[in-house]
Length: 114
Length: 115
Image (cartoon, rainbow over all chains, first blue to last red; front, side):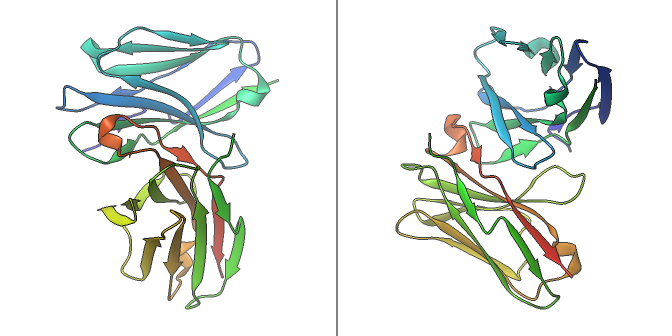
């Protein structure tokens, strides 16, 4: 079973629009960690954020914000005022305290149209 | 800040040949991971090492092997290459194991094309 689900395969938005990328996870652990990575067309995987399961405080970093809700097992990522440089594939990922695995979602390909 | 260094960045090999990818983790990082990412797919875990010992094994083919050396760099050896091995290979490193919530930092990847 997929531990991390990113239901949106592809999203296209016009520049300056806001966009939310969904991530739903599944785990039986009470302690776990959630991540977002960005993969631009050049291919590298860039770390964006890490969240602990015991810290539900939402986070904002510039135009990026993350909404962590344990009640719905979701860790959504919002980009406000999107820019062309935001075009990339975004991966949500999970690691658990009881293992040493890193589970990726299938990624959401975001295209920002100028 | 120093990142994970991978070499070569691009590699073209013929079927049945052998290829070796190298990875230099972030300084002081003791854990190294190898991932394979096919076109349009998410990265698939191959193998990891912690303190120079194999830590976990994923979907790594028997034709592939890897090791972590005393200086913590790692090499992924791929033999009897097949067309399906064409992919982007990532090395990643972390300070400590994942179950402690450590973050994995990825290199820029090595593009392997088998022709």
